Image 1 (cartoon, chains in turn brown, purple):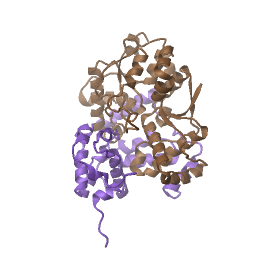
Image 2 (cartoon, each protein chain N blue to C red; image 1 turned 60 degrees about the vertical axis):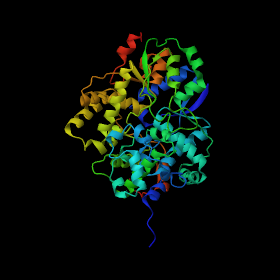
Image 3 (cartoon, rainbow over the protein chains, first blue to last red; image 1 turned 45 degrees about the horizontal axis):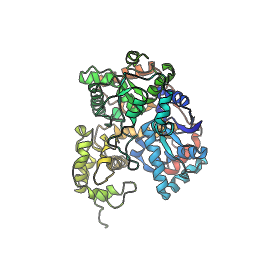
Image 4 (spheres, rainbow over the protein chains, first blue to last red; image 1 turned 180 degrees about the vertical axis):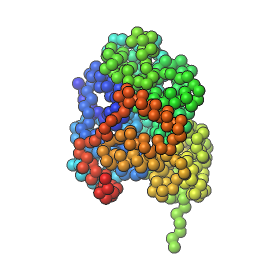
Length: 290
Length: 187
């Protein structure tokens, strides 16, 4: 059973607990093991970059150094944590001066960043390491007839890491097809949900959320799939406020890709955290026999 | 007296790992402005802001809300034909405005970011209820009530933390951060 160091991130401790639950259940069913990173700390989100760069790299480096000590790939589920950890790793590897500064600070916790680790997002691990064929072989309850909008959002794709296609990705659609669901063509799948603007610039973020929800509904989606806790919260928990603000009547459930994969693997919905939503997916799921 | 650094160079010096002054390579094509999903809410588009920086309009740039409305979606970054790290530019302007304590009145972003940084200093992890204090008090009655309703629903679903989480080696962690930014012993 291949083992990974698992970086949960602050939001999955409570707000996105269902992401954590479904990630653990689904990976276990797929034969890989997520081992929670010992004493991990916050990745710094974007807020730390607003105040001090070195500080934000130090926060990420502590997590990277702990994962290096375990000699395991570090896997994040939050797109924001993933982006921060991934690029901190890259920048620290590319810039010995930066690494030296950060290592001087890390010595206070008896840690050292050597640049030997790799940072991954869980969706990438499922697709590349487990593989779509292996997932398909384990699907016992395909989500036939479920129209899903694959919402990529931003930070699992951007910034660009190498020469990968960041304008026309298909991996999310492919994953949904693998579990028997029907991905809809969702024109706004790469557009930002507003992220923390929901707290700092509410009118802007509500407008952005509205665009995404409306476009998913217009594309024929019954549910939106996401790979990020912040996207999930913005799209789901603020639907009421969007409806209030714009006089709309939107009510579309937002599920994590891990929950959808878990359902197709016949894991009981409550073990995947289903039921913790403000927009309940139950009617949609029962329409496809779940 | 030494000659003053042009504003454009001052900003470039704040960009991580930038070689030379990337802002001078901007061709003002507007791809960033056409891509950015927050443009309708910004005082100036990213394209215009870069033009303003090049023109040395320091006060006007610092007084705008543009960089505080950047959501870090990096969509402009991957499309810029000149490869300018526009999101990083927005971060740099945010830092500059926090350091100078100079930002457009009524913006929540700077207060939120500083509250966030202090929260992590204290516990090593994020805690939503403390963060909420940085924006809730700026809300009108309508928004406040809606936010309270959302929070109540989340609490009923067990999705809001009651106690702040804490990492185990918090003392080491605090010393580590103070090696980067000396903050004295302030708790």
